[in-house]
Image (cartoon, rainbow, N blue to C red; front, top):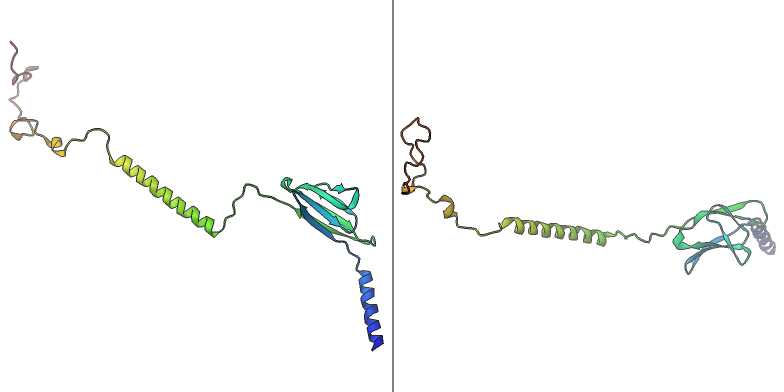
Length: 171
């Protein structure tokens, strides 16, 4: 039984000795982004790492409002490989979160605005400006005895012959 425990311990110890990885942690402290690793950090591409206190294991990527991004690498402690980390830090400062409540509010406010606009157009276009007389004045009789048309007189070929026939002459 003791030999079984000893063999299990040797097996676990040999496996753990082969595991030699590096860890990269990304931390936000106040308004800056930091990379913290247990081994040396190196920039492959992107935002350059500013070393914190000349420590090659800790790097400062700058303010998060400047959207730091890039690929970073840390070498394993045994020197036989490396691990990479890609960071894409995007802060949307002028964005609106579009959830169901916001979308419903937009739809309802759009309907209300459309109805108010239609009401305004109806009220404005429905009333004419100025004094409105009754509709009886539209059909008033312009001739005597409710005649709509004046009967034509006999045809005379003289120019201006029909002008002033019914008018009184000024004396």
